[in-house]
Length: 88
Image 1 (tube, rainbow, N blue to C red):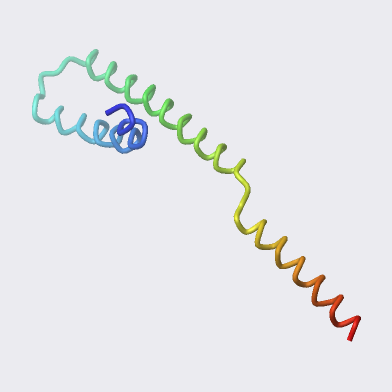
Image 2 (tube, rainbow, N blue to C red):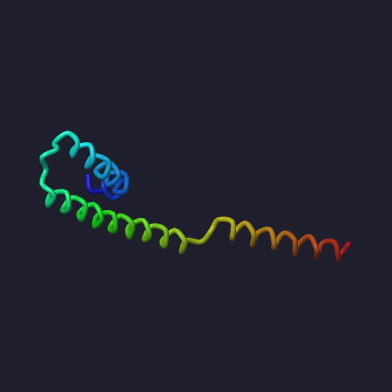
């Protein structure tokens, strides 16, 4: 369950944020303090979700691109072709 929440935290937050106004129309007698607390909680959880996503993005940016290795191999092949043409 923890892994599910970690992988889909932003989606779960979006569902909770969408349910808040629906529940408000269903139960119109909710005091404003509860609404303020719900809004603050959603903002706080949204901030945590944003930081988690930023961490995933930063980790992904630190990984080497597979295209870098392909570029190195292409440069090696180009150098080998140039050597071969010089010998011919």
